[in-house]
Amino acid sequence: MTAYAFWNNKGGVGKSFLCFVAATEYAQAHPGADVYVIDLCPQANISETLLVKPNALRELTGENPRRTVAGYLEARLNSPFQSLNDVSPFVTRPKDYNSNLPPNLLLVCGDNLLEILSEAIRQTSQLAIPVDAWKQVLSWIKDLTFALRQQSGNRDTLFILDCNPSFAIYTQLALVAAENVVVPFTADDSSRRALENVVALLYGYPRGDAKIDAYARINFANRAKSEGVETPKLHAFANNRVTQYRGKASSAFEAVSKTIKETLDRLHENHRQVFTTPKDKPSERFIEIPDYHSACVVMTKKGIPLYDLRPGPKDIEGERVQLNPEPLGRYSRALATFVECL
Image 1 (cartoon, rainbow, N blue to C red):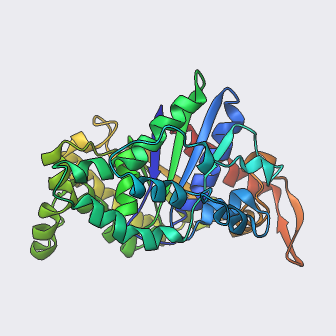
Image 2: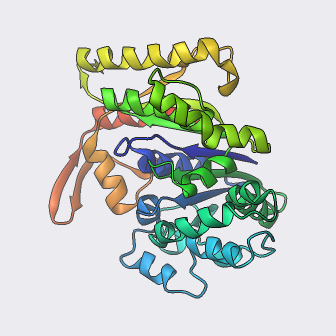
C-alpha cells in the first residue's frame, strides 16, 4: 500500500488536476491494482472532474449515510475511538458516472460538509480521555486506507489524497494517512513562501521569521513527534504551468524557479530525513509541466483522462477549443514523466 498526499499551502497550483492525472494514468497502466482517490478538499474539485455527470455530487451527498468522505467522518464522530468494519457505503466507482475512466479507479468523494465537521473533529481530538485522543483522531483517514486495503484483498493498492491548501484538521488527517507528499507549485514568489510554510507546518523547521518559527514549533509538528504520529516525506515537486518560449521555460520562470530550488536545496542540506530520496537534491528531481490551458480545460470539463486525449477541435459548453498535436505531445510527455515518479 502506498499513499500520496498532494498538497501545497497555496491554492491554484493544480493539485486537483495533477491528482486526476496521477490517479487515472496509474489505474489505466496497472489494471491489477485498485487506485483510490480520497478527496479531502471541501470544494471537491477532483470529485467533480472524475464524476462529470451533473448533480452527481448532490446524489452522493443526498444518500444516507452520505457516500462521501464527510459521511465517513460523521460515522467516526459517532464512535470516535472505534474503527469502522465496513467502509463500502462511502466508496463510489467513478466509471458508473463517467465511462471514460478505468473500472479499478475508486473514489471517496469530497463534500462541502467537511468544512462544517472540522470543528467537531478538532474538539474531539482535544478530549482529555482517552489520553491519546489526538493521535487516534488524526489517524481516522489512515484507518480508512487500511479498511480499503482490506476491501481490495490481494490486489495492490494506491491511494491519492487531494488536500485543501489550508492546514485545517482535515488536511492534517490526509497528511497523517500519507507516506509521501507531492508538492505542485507555480513559479512565483507566493509559491516559494508556501513551500516554506509546508516545511514549517509539517515538520516544524524554521523559515527565518522568529514569530512564525515560534508558533510552528509548538503546533502540529512537535505534537506529532511527541505522540508518535508518523508524518509523510517530501517525494516530488512539480513545477506546474511553466510558460515556455520555443520549447523551453521562459527566462522569467527560470529565474523564479531557481530561487525555489535554492530554498529546497538549503532545507535538504540540514534536514535530509524529510525527503524520500535523501541522497538526491530536490532541485535535481523537479518535474516541469508546461502550461497548456486548453488541454487542461478539456480534460477537467469532460472528465477525459490523458491517455484518451486526442488532438483536434473540441466543443466545451458551446465554445470551440483546438488541441494542436505538438503542444499536446509535449504536455503529455511531461505529465507521463510526472506519473512515473509515483
